[in-house]
Length: 177
Length: 283
Image 1: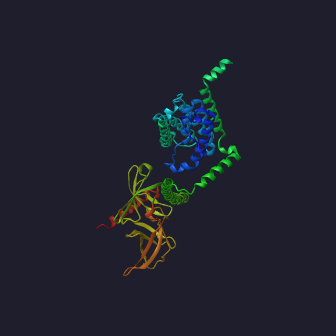
Image 2: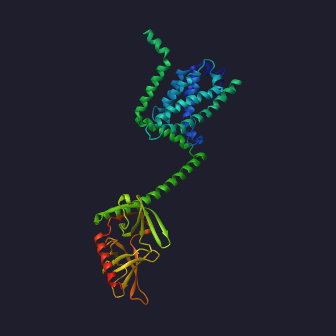
Image 3: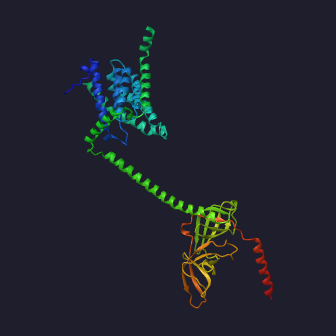
């Protein structure tokens, strides 16, 4: 079934329920992509966090409240799928949704996403996300959080920000059309 | 009630954040996914099945990094292996040396060999104990294997030993089996020679050679080595007796300095007798 994804006039704009279903489907797909395919683009075991980009997207489009809820659910889903400590990704993505929600502007969300500002929001939310995530990640280990965060947290944030260029360009192109 | 609803609506984002954070911590306190029981098996099975579908796709980046990691691991393991072997050898040596003080009455000072000097026919070793540790010139050095040499110089923290394999060494020794006395000397190579052994006396290859009670420098009955070769010297009344040192000087790392300074009373009477004899023979 081909879904026509017209950002300006489609039912996705007008029907929130349909939008949320679409978010859920995309989140599930991204989870699969994350677990199965992302190893092919891993650089020194660092991969972009696609669910974080989706969380930021939702927070920017739907607002802080929805962004947090989405972040929590996506994180929980990812914790289950990736066999991570249950709640660690949920906490980090909730915080990311909260931070990204500050950049929500009613009726101006597409301008934000199709703009470099989106990359900034992803980088900021990603920084907060990874700060929290790696803090709880290294807590049971005898390693320095600072060094670990600089090595993996910053790298993951940068890689995620680079990956966020694709949705930004996509929306930018659709916006121009 | 109205005010409460207004409060909740006004601060719903913060309340939601707090709620979700608390829920996240609650999930984290649950611990691992194993708490979810059979659900985990389903998830892991499904993910594994999906991953196996695409496992055939090669990942050059991962292979490269894995190769690098394996090389590093290999190097680390090689270093670990070498260290382990070194520790085993050292452990065996130290264990043997630990037993030495139990069967000797001498006060022993343990020391590590920190340097060896080989100058033509004079072999010396430096140890990491010196005058501050009670070491003095003339003290004898041994290991669990046998005689090493004698201290010929000290500084506060170091001492220099003259090894058995030194042209200037003379050790009064005896063959353990037959109590035949002789003088141990070094003439180069890695073996010693037991001098002054008349042809008529019983000396055989395999006999152990110990320090003699005649020696004023060395404690008696310390193993010097084992006879490996006995040969007749042409035009001589003596035999040539080759002794293999008990101590392997090439691998010498730890030793004991024996606190047996020569007996002053004995030295004094020997000196007086010698002087007396000189006076009697003097014209």
